[in-house]
Image 1 (cartoon, one colour):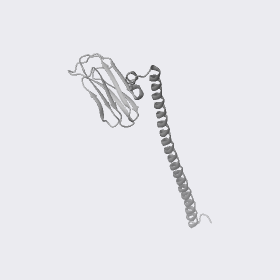
Image 2: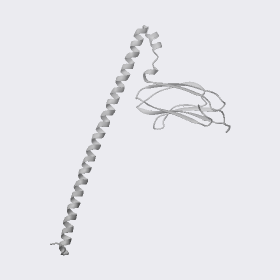
Image 3: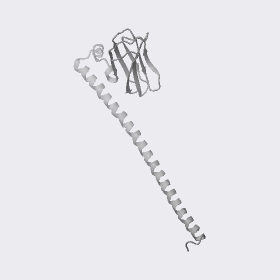
Image 4: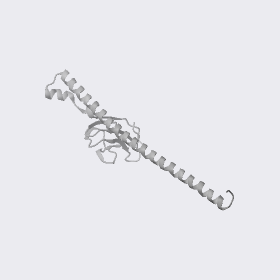
Length: 182
């Protein structure tokens, strides 16, 4: 539901070189509705003005967070009732049309299902490889931070021991000079 002058946004992380498709259907109530798709750096990938229904598609250039926003704009300042917004976004393996692939390559239903399962398993393997690389990066960062904290702690302890030793020696010399101790 989108109110007059309202804005609703959806965010999703999408991998590099993924095809993203979407279709939308917006209930008409006389107000203008804009749809924009932007990446995390603010680049506009898709922009539809005065949209009521339609489709959009784009291919990602890198792994990023993408934001799809639907904005209702009142033309005369009149408050209109809320409207229903239908938005269906697909990316990756969901965007492939296996029915058309079956017709063009003259595949049997079992072959189409095998192709779909093959693509699905490849997608899962790619996701695991990405997670593994992210885990390696996080582990390297964790180890680097651990070693820096350890060396900083050792340096701090050595400074404190040096200051404590200097303080004891200084006070001993001071009290001997004032002849309070022998």
